[in-house]
Amino acid sequence: MIFDKILNRLIDLELIKRDEIQRIDAMHMIADIAIPTVVALVKKGVREILKPLKGQKPKVYEDLIKKIDADEYAREKVNHADEGRLDIEKRKKKLVKVVTEARVVLKELEGVAVNRELRKRMEMLRRILCENVNEFGGKIQEREYKDKPKDLLVSPIDEDARYGAKSDTKRFMGYKANVTESVENHFITNVEVMRGNKREAETAVQLVIEQKRNGLVPQKLVGDAGYSDGINRKMLKDNGTIMVAPLRQVNARAQAVYPKSMFTINEETQTLKCPQGVETTSRYRDVRHGLKQFHFPIGKCRVCKVQKECTNEKDGRRVVGISMFNKELREAEVYNTTDEFKKDMKLRPPIEGKLSELTRYHGLRRARYRGLVKVQLQSLFTAAAVNIKRWIKLILAGLTRQTDAIVAF
Image (cartoon, rainbow, N blue to C red; front, side):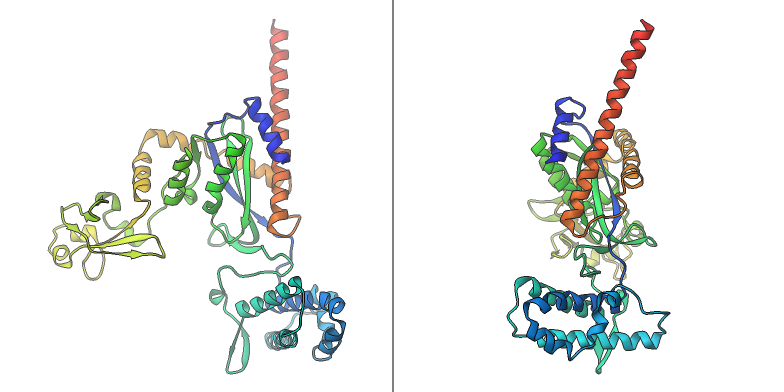
């Protein structure tokens, strides 16, 4: 409400134009939690159950702590590492111990009537065990990182924090914040926080469509290649906004073959024509990737004079995946070769300065709270403060110009 009131005032003063071009980018936020080992994660999960159980079911609690090492789950034990460095064998033994006791806790609570919150914490502990621990032949061991799920729960203290990556080497634990900014006066028009493992593009459409409540419909939204998905282009186009972004680079294997733009799709007959005039209707739907995979006749491909330039498949046949957003992607491919596109892309870099201001001067690199809702509130309050600062700066700049004009007169 506060953010929107400030934004509406800026719109009324025409400091933000209703159809003004906007830019978009994302930044990462580090969660307000320590990075736990698997042992600490399991212990935290057990402690989160024992705390409310003591008050709700004292008899069950008393019976339970006789079957586990209750001291292991005291606050000072859970939140602080053991003295010294545990060697590998001690770590393995510790993992076996806490996992075994966690299973005891869950088993003892089976059939016990507990409230919704405690039931939720039990499910969380089950999830922690399932995602992080394997058991082969009765031997408990930690899963390899590559075998853990992508949506890995990293802490029962902050259920929404996730592992994310800004590059192949730079990983973090927490959230991402998507920010849109007006081009002319550099005001933040919206901000949306998501879990750290989400792609930046996932909230791009929402960021723009939400602005309609303030009467804003940007004619263009300028971003990097991370926002260039066909679905974003289609949904923003329906909103009255053009997505301007470089297309994603095709993988190395596909770079050596004719691009999809050289193939002509007939939507009515569902046929695809190659550059040499060969047509095919042979296709299957790739539901996972949202594609129609067209297969050209292997007999025609093998005798084609440009086969080596067209495909590098082992069987010599060309297969082309056509997205349901193929029209939007091909339009973008053409637009991205124009001088207007180059001009638009020059508008994007200044948003890096805005993200730097948010993180360096207003602490938005770190989440002050836990949970997606509260981190979103932090982002909105910070964005409101930054907009007020910018507003004051423009007012002072206007007063300076007026003073200079009077002096000159």
